[in-house]
Image 1 (tube, one colour):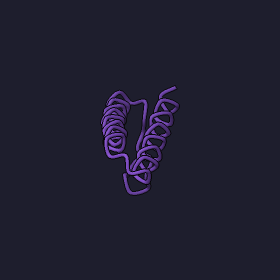
Image 2 (tube, one colour):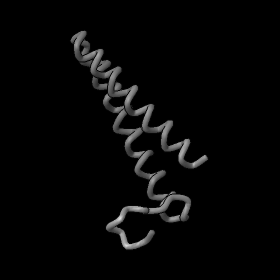
Image 3 (spheres, one colour):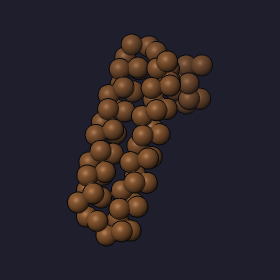
Image 4 (cartoon, one colour):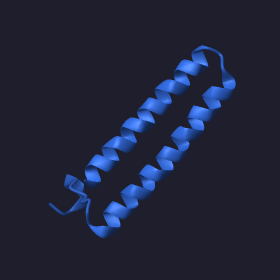
Length: 69
């Protein structure tokens, strides 16, 4: 469930980025800025969810250089 939330947030960030790029090509500055602010907000939520997942133990660091396998 937790990893699904992360995937949905990441997908929403990609959609917001694509939407802002589309408005940038149409030269609609107000909507471009609106969608870029949405992306910044989603990135902040994603970072908070990652920190909560690491602190609560629902996410692990499994990188070879981390020392825990």
